[in-house]
Image (cartoon, rainbow, N blue to C red):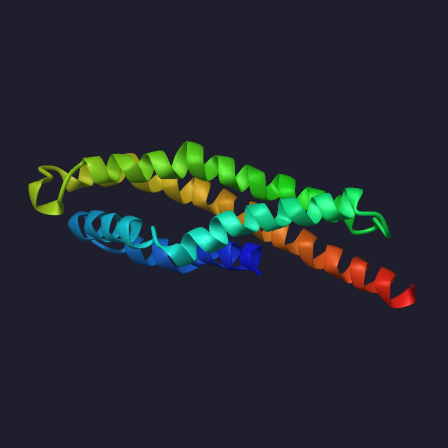
Length: 156
């Protein structure tokens, strides 16, 4: 569930939020993204974002070393690798861009919001799409692993 919620968040930014903000003028865009970057840092986000990583790792461990049927294990490991890729992208690209946007200061004090936006938007959007794809693929792998596990346990 946490992986699916995280994938949904990044997908919604890819197909709704950022295309909507693309139509906004520079000041509005920068102000909105600064506000979003602050408001997203909350318990619900962290429970999903970090919980997905922890729960997938635990699931992989249980399926690899817990005995019983291991047919789902490769799919869980694939999900973990994909989610880790998304995690690294977030830490290496999107968070630093968010921090740079925040460091530009409040919107009323930014002399050239167009330059701030230009440095941020295209790169952030591109890598968010990659995050959306990798986290959605991770969710798909986990879904298939659940189907395989269900088949294996239904017949045993």
